Length: 251
Length: 274
Image 1 (cartoon, one colour):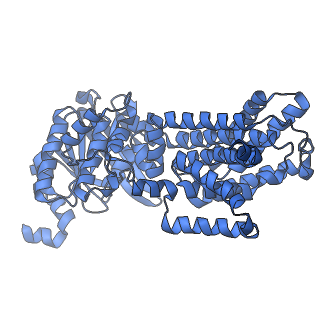
Image 2: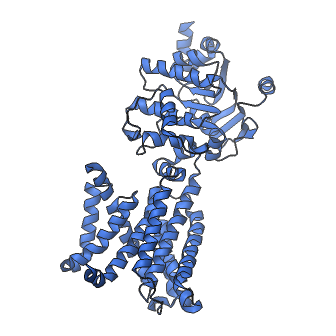
Image 3: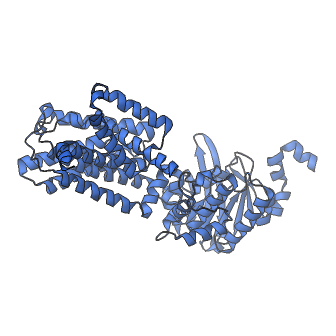
């Protein structure tokens, strides 16, 4: 990790030995990772591994007990939530959290809150198109959209802030294969534009298709890291997902 | 027409003042805060402006500004301890604050105590009242187009998601409380200066409850709705005088009906049928 930090020259999001406790439970145990600009890092692990906890620690909802989180030269781990967002970290949520009774356009505009001025309708449309949101009426209530459109609108809202880092918490949950295909193209497009992406996801084919690097968590500890192919072959990972017996059967 | 206006000038003034109060509460409600301190802010400004006018000879504009400033300062201080409270807990804490303000007004000799404070110059005429209301309405309409208005609405919808896009939720809540206190303060000054005489009871829980009913009837997040609610709830009791003994009953029944059948108030009904 140290070598990565030196070479990275500090443009990206860096977590250095971050530990988070929930009361007596250690939810994250000295987890380190780096998301450089224009790369996609996958974060996988069984339920309860600490994936969402990590996103919440980065975005300032949870405060790490130890370790540091920084974006470029900015230390994030002591900032309040809205300041982390203003520093350039955008996210989506595992359970969709749109501004339900506001219009589709206002949701996107709210996403651009940290930027100067307000977005014109054209800019809003452009972001919606980019996130493949299909809505005819910009003035319609966000909460009345179909589930898949709401998920993509959340991504459009996150992109509206022109983030340096985008944290996606299970974006493919509940999407059909065609929609997941669109999501794959979108994530690649976001990374190509220079944004670093952290992808928390259970859909392994999506992770394998878009991630440059994958970190595997189990019970708050890093149990593997590497390219998607390396990680998929790791016996420790297979064991964490399937249990010791099943892992033995597969060998 | 003129005869009607002259005959009902007291009622017309009362409608304007109540509309200002309803507008002031609607600002907090728009950020999703059930902060019920409007009557207290109104009382603070009423006493500051009246005492200033009687003891120090302030004219109405000066008294109005001083009253609004006092209410705003108290609101900013109040925002600190109640900053983390939400929903019904916030409502209870702010109602408690209102009671504290009322009891101070009763016991502080300078206010004239429970007997009331009298001799206030009667210089808040209909023009002042409706001029202030028009300015407040225009300011809110202009504000509605700004980015801050979006931050207020986003805070109401989902505080965490609002923080997640960079909105300082604590500042939004404090800002709406203070802005509401300024409007309630103007209403308090106008009320005092239209009535010669004020008592702490004028600014108690029943006033707060009336204002809340106006906002709920009008539609909690709509400025125009708040004004319509204020007009209805102030004028209706006068128009159906024969029901006077049942005033509280009828206003309770109207509130219940609105909450059950039109939770977005008159503004919501208007949107649905237009």
